[in-house]
Image (cartoon, rainbow, N blue to C red; front, side):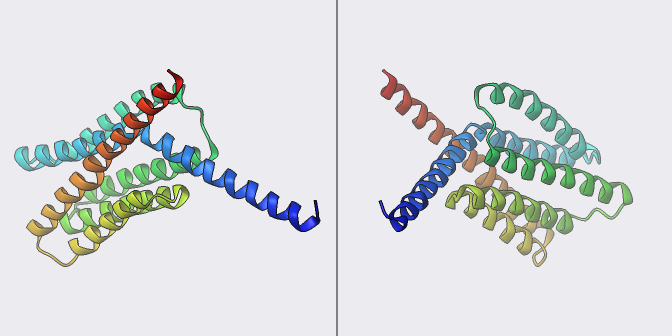
Length: 200
């Protein structure tokens, strides 16, 4: 084999490895589908509690409860799925986003500077960053669509009425959290049934 052929083969092997890593990253992401649905439901619960009861601490209480539940469930999920470098990178992006979002929104609330347009724009921007980071690492168009939807909703919230911004926020939660989570669950179910058929 010539030097050029060896280099071409090495490049081909590297590209194949990268593709396999992306496929594995997508597979491991589907194992976290429940977290998208959980957080979508948590957002709706916090919105309902804060709106109906006019309780200022509804958001922090629900977010802390969702974080604790996520931590508990994720420990069980991690036992069955070994960590990968890509998985750790994606997990880091989501963890940092969630922590920053919690601290920032709590600070706005406690300082009395909380305002619906600002809240919605910040949440949209932060979720766009986390989804976009995951989508770039995994080269996943569906998650990039969610990132763009969150960013679009965040930007639109700056220019519309509070009622319109709230409706956009509710729609984004539904499509980018709950529907996307269900989509991931379906992919995971298909993958499991396919691998079960292969092993049978």
